[in-house]
Length: 348
Image (cartoon, rainbow, N blue to C red; front, side):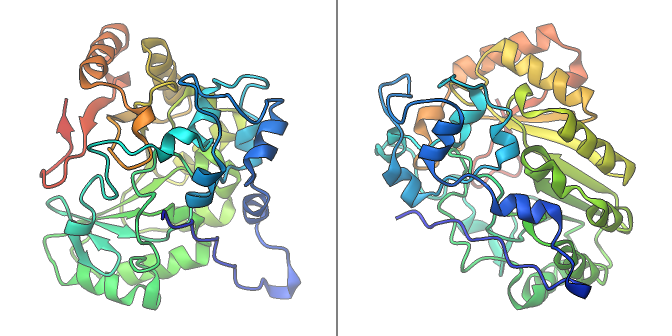
């Protein structure tokens, strides 16, 4: 059984009875029922998948649907092949057993280096800050991750920060999850205040999809926290299609840049979503127009439930060659795969 995603932690009561931040209210209003999602888009409740499969309530029970309404508004009405819809809609194909697809596609379990700490690459430590996400992407490589046992926030970050402090070879901390920016800003400040006591840290990186799917998260409190951090900060965003960008996302990116963050995008190559030169070129150009530099194009992590998204390596390489022939070099992301045990992402 695939564990359900953990709910957003309740924020501390605001002083003077003030309402919680707007992004938290929008989070709680997310679409969670596949039937409601399809109704909003004017679509029937079956027969959507080009391979003949339909939506699956069993798949949704195992890995719940969650998608912010602002992201739904960017989907094309009446189009069952919409690339944003395909990323979030639970399908029967997720329940088909496929050889070579497992529960821990990238070796997270073997790389555990402390409570909520994953140590795969030289100089870097990744913190599983939370199990919550604003959107549940059906290809997520951590859709089976045991967040209840392995979230760094447990015990007020004490064990996780101690593991980093004990290893002077770590000079970069990566906040991941789940989505670290699903945590309330005071909780993020609690973590970074603890990390300030680690003298060998030089950089901080945040992996997040929230500025794309819920741009309201990039509010004044978050940008003030970001601007006050003592390290250079890279924010690695996750958008897979140009249609994920709109004016609200552009404004969020501008606020992040103004706070001093370097913005990068990593995408996943997904069949039926962005597996064409036109789609990939549009993604690179649109993300760069928003101030986000293309960084990685990942081959699919072979996690159970995501096989229907896979693009063959030879096709991925051909797409990447065509992309490089079409765009300026700085707009061409690196085509890579994460392989458990490798010292870094493996170029393809």
